[in-house]
Length: 349
Image (cartoon, rainbow, N blue to C red; front, side, top):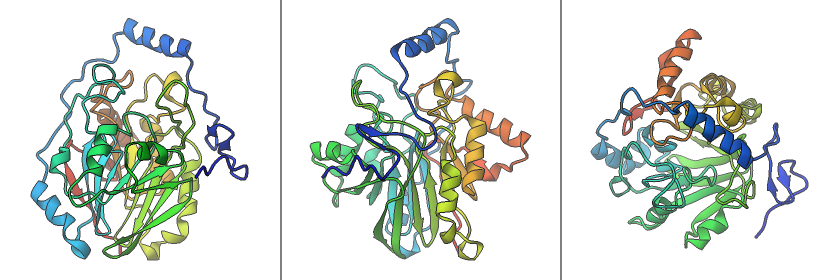
């Protein structure tokens, strides 16, 4: 069933969707060529100073935690790029699963992975939920979702923005829920209902030259009794993040455990600013999002795997440390981790 356009919703348009606070216009071919000429002339991106850090994943513990039910310890594991495995509420979920060699419709061209996934698809515990923020190739990877749909024990529930469910159905993925901004879906977890809401982001969508903005994009707030998670998805900076904090304020009072226990915020793919600003935050803006949403702690993602822009793929965590220190923000409030690394989270009161 087609649920858009809905004239009562300002972000719905006749042929798709638009941002809340800044009208996004996909870059023209001349702008794209200008960027690529400048990058070629200036020999960008620079070579990384060091490989993206990796650690051996805690597979035995993660599998045991996935089976622990109400005894599950809230935690996250960075698999790479925007793919994070989060265990909370008795369930195991993945954000934007991307395990392929290239972020591209072609096997022989397009951005190539520089760092292997921290956990391979075959090593994952059973995944209960997959959260897809938008349909760009580095976030919605066909081989990855196909493999997850075939996982032993049955497919996960795919939670996606408006317009993506038909694409999933074309790949015989039918266990899916489609949401508009601020819509919520409840899933039974070990502690009771786990609530998933699609939240606004300032970005865009496309998988071909003719379908820009045809499907919705966004981030996710996931609220469980033991943990509140925010995944922003790809985004430029906007007032959407202050809106998100206000929207959930009645669920995050100090007596209820406070704000988001963990926010997953992109810190890479920001240069050059004239090309990227409307769609990807830089480090200063990522820190503003952290403050706007009232997160207790934030993980910097979307770096170290694919070369998508003009900064070196290892620059974002160095820049994060520099700006964070200049602003007097403790490292434990906003940090980057190694690919494959797991961090435990204190459960909410």
